[in-house]
Amino acid sequence: MTEHTAAHARTLAELYDAPEILRVVNVWDAVSCKVVSELSGTKAIATAGHGIAASHGYPDGEKISLDLMIAALERIVRVTNLPVSADLDGGFGDSAEAVRRAIGVGVSGANIEDQMRSLTDSAQLMRNAVAAGEREGVAFVLNARTDALIKGGDRPRDEAIRDAIERGRAYLEAGAHCVFVPGVVSGDEATQLVEGIGQRKVSVIGLPGALSAAEYEARGVARISYGPMPQNVALTALKRLGESLLDDGVIPEDTEKLNNF
Image 1 (tube, rainbow, N blue to C red):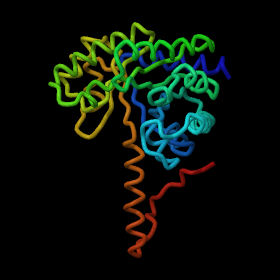
Image 2: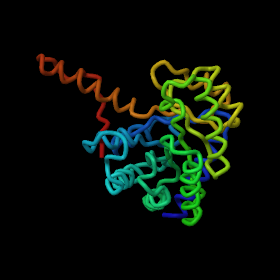
Image 3: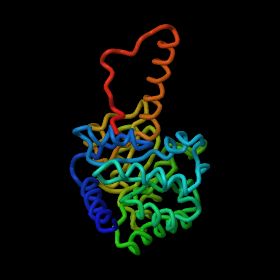
């Protein structure tokens, strides 16, 4: 398993470094992973921590246990031949242990949040995660997340951008491969982040109101993910279908059979 995971980690790192932006459609369980894995444009799988927690009946923010998270990741890894990057929230109190266990079920990379801890503590959090991969023989691909924009409070936006850049540089120095800066990032802000952190070193999220993947790619962004939004879209479709069926509707004829285990 470790040799296979190490190979996937090398592939994942190459995808981050490639000129084309890495597009990942976040999944939350085995069947969503299977559907996304079979799409022709999918090169890697990324999980959504919020989505996995919700599928188990928990709110976001490490309310789900690490045991349940790892079990969910194991089921996801089992149904795909692609590299899997996991959302490990804030490290579940021990980022090294979370990474060690994730590698144990075949995960080759992860997002870990700074949750706006002090810069010193946050850098150490990232350093511990990277070191855990090294001990397991895997060049674990850490997409270090800073909440500088989404938890910036009332401070000016340009100050939050500067903070994200400072934190991002520190996380790269700690061994992270890329820096995830969630929030709706404008074109000018994406340029500032890339200039401050590095080409192919910034990861963004495609929330409503964000730019397209191609527009971020043109600014040197490495990766775009979508967090809990794919699950929200799927649940919206279920809600609309349920409303229709309860109103004497019928299943649409173009419905595909996608849960083909």
